[in-house]
Amino acid sequence: MNVQRIAAFADGGRGGNPAGIVLAERFPAEADMRRIAAEVGYSETAFAVPDGDTGKWRVRYFSPESEVPFCGHATIALGAALARHAGPGQFTLQLNDAGITVEASASGEGYSSALQSPPTRSAAARTELVDKALALFGYRPDQLDPALPPAKIHGGADHLVLALKHRSDLAAMSYDLDAGRALMRDHGLVTIMLVHARGTTEFDVRNAFASGGVLEDPATGAAAAAFAGYLRDLGWAHGNRIHIIQGEDMGARSVIEARFEDEPGSSIRVSGATRDIA
Image (tube, rainbow, N blue to C red; front, top):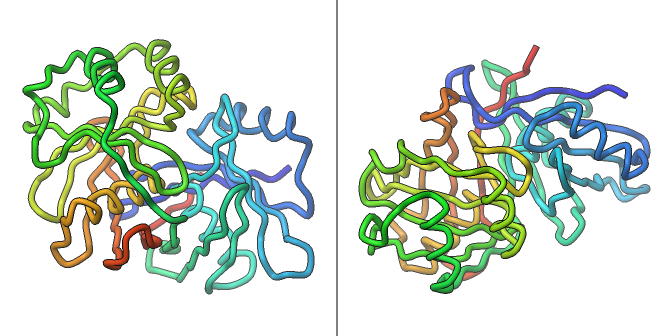
């Protein structure tokens, strides 16, 4: 089975988050999809098949350890693969729990893609969860940025966001993978998103992805969509556009742009460049 390897949210032809992409006439058996995702070894591999005669594509995402409901960076990579397969344009995707679109266009370095996320929502994180997450990373409550309070955020999948006052605290992120996996699974989290605000529209981010067996994800489109929705819920408009710099601390700098409308809960447009991995 042909597995394309494409990095999403690349920065100038480098960096980005690699995803495996499989285009097929029908899905392999679930056990085979799990095995392929584990063999590829990236944080996610997306499997896409034509959805009958509808013109849509049915998509499922697998990490090395589990199926996930939505993966932004793999969707961006999938857009590039579909553009190579059928020509640039917009593609309608049916996920397990939602319908979305991805649009891909040719660029000087390959393809750029933009997805429209599932609906977003956010709510204040429970004190018990915040305390456990702080303990996991070895942070103190006074290291948190009060302008961006801890929250459980959703944009196709659930994430916990913790904002830190100082960039140096973000750079120092470390945690035990097994303990992180247990915490994320107990609370239904795909990632824990650590954030530092560079300004009103630029954010440095690190995403712990222990639930998928990965210590850190270099670019997380689903979390970016959820985070943009969370900022909107806080009334943090600032032109309705943000840029996220992720992966810098692990040597895989990635750039994510998220745009959003004022309507609460509405879809987020998440975009970025892709590059093929040899």
